[in-house]
Structures are given as C-alpha cells and as structure tokens.
Image 1 (cartoon, protein in one colour):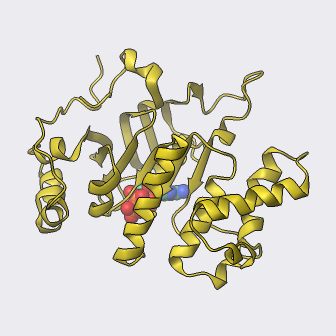
Image 2 (cartoon, helix red, strand yellow):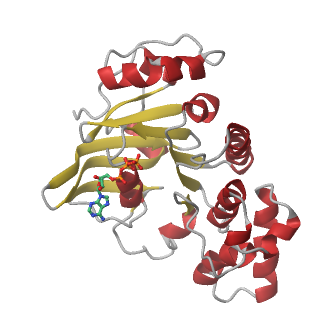
Image 3 (spheres, rainbow, N blue to C red):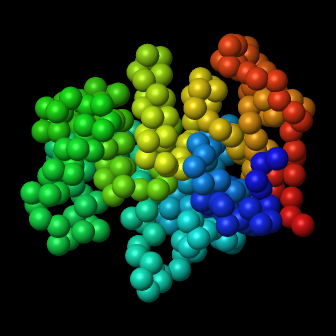
Length: 279
Ligand SMILES: Nc1ncnc2c1ncn2[C@@H]1O[C@H](COP(=O)(O)OP(=O)(O)OP(=O)(O)O)[C@@H](O)[C@H]1O
C-alpha cells in the first residue's frame, strides 16, 4: 500500500532510501531505514522528539553523510558528483528549515536572491530582483515585505519568507521542517493552505516534518512514522489509525489525534507494516 521497498515503483519515486544508518559516535539514530516518497505527493513525517526526522531530512539533502545506505533523489545518487549534462541536484529542491534560517543581515528579497546567485551567477541583477519579488508575492507576503529584514517580520511572515527562498529555483521537491511550529492556529491553517496550493499549482513533491496533527489531516497524502530507528509504517492516516502499534495508537487515536481527525477521516483499510521490510 505504501510504495515502500524496492519494486518497480522506484522509477516513480521522487526519493528512495534504502538501508540507511546514521550514528553520532555510539548514538545510533537510524538503522536499516527505508522509505520511498512518491512523485507529486505530500508526505508527512512524524515521530517522537529525537527520533531523527531532521537528521533524515539532512541526509536526503546531503548535509549529513550517512554511516551507511543508499539515497536516490529524482533518479540521482545524492552523494555522487553531478553527472555530465544533469546539472546540480541541489538546484532541484528547496528547503525551509526549522525557524526559517534566514540571513539576518539581508532583506527578504536578498535572502531569496542567495540561491539564484549561487546557481545562476551570470543572471543579471535586474532579473534576479524580479524573480525574488515574484517568489515573495507567491507566498502571500505583501510587496513591501521584500525590503524588510527578518527581525522586522512576524513568525508567520518569516516562514513565508523562508518558503519564498525555498522556491527561488523553481524546485521539483520541497522540504519543510516543522513549518507550522510556533504559529497560531489561524496562521498554521493559512500556511497549510499555502503549501497545498503551491504543491498543486507547481506540481511539487513535499517532504514535510511536523508534529501538527491538523496539518497531517489537512494536506498530507501519506504519513511516515519514525520510531525504533526506522520508518515503522507509512500510509494514509486512515491506514495508520487502524494499526495496533502503541506509538501510532497514542499519536493518532489519543485525545488530540481524535480531535484532529473529527470531520477529516474517511474509513480506510488495514495498515501494511512491511514499510522497511526487504525482499
Ligand atoms: N550533528 C549532530 N551531532 C550529534 N548528535 C546529533 C547531531 N544532529 C542530531 N543529533 C542527535 O540526533 C538525534 C535526532 O535529532 P533530530 O534533530 O533529527 O530529531 P527530531 O526527530 O527532528 O527531533 P524534534 O522533533 O525534537 O525536532 C538527537 O538525539 C540529536 O541530539
């Protein structure tokens, strides 16, 4: 059900992770973790604090070198040097880090220009400025926000500015690390709608780390659950809710999970626990 494993679905996968190990000294974060993200889906990634969601994201985007395992993104090995004629894989994804990670000494527009400068050094300053302003507008920020510094923005505006920078290079893949953390419920719901709208209009694949049950219900096609150093299950929320795994039960069928599910949940089929099982 979940598109996991190593079958023919691999060609449709935006991201394929097989046998991933990550450790810091003796601290094992992931062991033999496997996951596939389908092209065009919004995949939610959940798990208790410290289960390695951010480390997983950093491994996928090449900021964390795994101890072992294979990661393929859009058909390319992230560890391999760029192949002739294929361009730099990093230009095909955008990342919104926790907290936005904006450069505090640059305006919003200048922040958005950073990846444009890096990947298109020959682009004229005028075109770069125009693209940056367009991306700022795309995220629903008012025009004047482009000339503001991060310290002059609210939390929600900072997230949108970070998103504008993540969209700078017209990515196929978008990584969002807890995008609604710290936002009030109305701001969080607005950010969810924006994510969904952008995914739909730009045809993005979205890898979304979150603790926000409303976000999972509102916009995620599937959810991957990290526990015990692996992806223990991956499926629709209906499928996950049918699982008898204690953490999944607590998370989705606890009081908050049930409240978030109210009004959202179609009745689903059974969960396949073969997420990380290899043939
Ligand atoms: N560079 C590093 N050096 C040593 N340990 C690290 C490093 N990066 C992460 N860790 C450890 O790896 C574990 C997983 O961290 P990670 O940030 O991926 O968790 P998470 O699931 O994203 O947590 P949260 O939901 O709280 O954000 C933590 O115990 C963390 O301390």
